[in-house]
Image 1: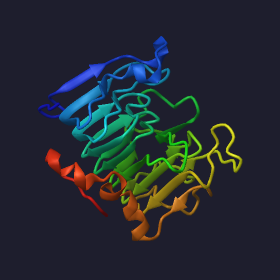
Image 2 (image 1 turned 90 degrees about the horizontal axis):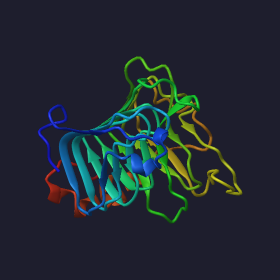
Image 3 (image 1 turned 90 degrees about the vertical axis):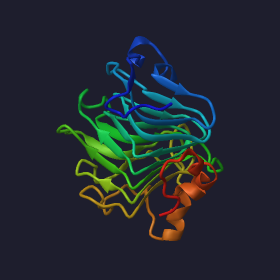
Length: 260
């Protein structure tokens, strides 16, 4: 699905949970077919606040988004399942910007927290909400060489991730973190017993590697998060190893960096 650029080709809808829909039902665009490629367009959900307003729901293996703007209020990108790659995209919303249980790498992209709909009900804005349940699952979100910041005078606490399930996995690496990023970095509920939706330290991962900018100081991060120090460990989350990008991304003719 190709457009003439995010400023010229716009697909939009306005469904939201406020009208009684489930999260996945609010999507403006739903992607199911393996090998899907979307480039040079904008996809928006202009629905009101009051729950999820998904712009794109992706549950297709080997899906690629290049130069795509994804906009909504809550959960604009629902990366639901399978391997996904995003390059030079812009993702903006007020909270839960990237939701789901895919194995997704977002590279060289802008992730923008906007205050358009005010402060979220729970008092902070989460960039990611990742839904891996067990350690053996290969899913997770990787944000590599991205810009993550507040726009439009946002005055809300921003965290890189909000824990959802006990095995949630998010890695933010080589990225610029704006001044709006909270010192604690993450919102994680931990329980060694693993009851309910509490994170289990042995199963979950909230990690950072070589980020920079005013929000990148890790000295006050929550104890349940990790700072990766070795490049040999960080490279495991780059596209070639994490989503086997070498075997399918080049065929689409989009730029990508396979390693660090």
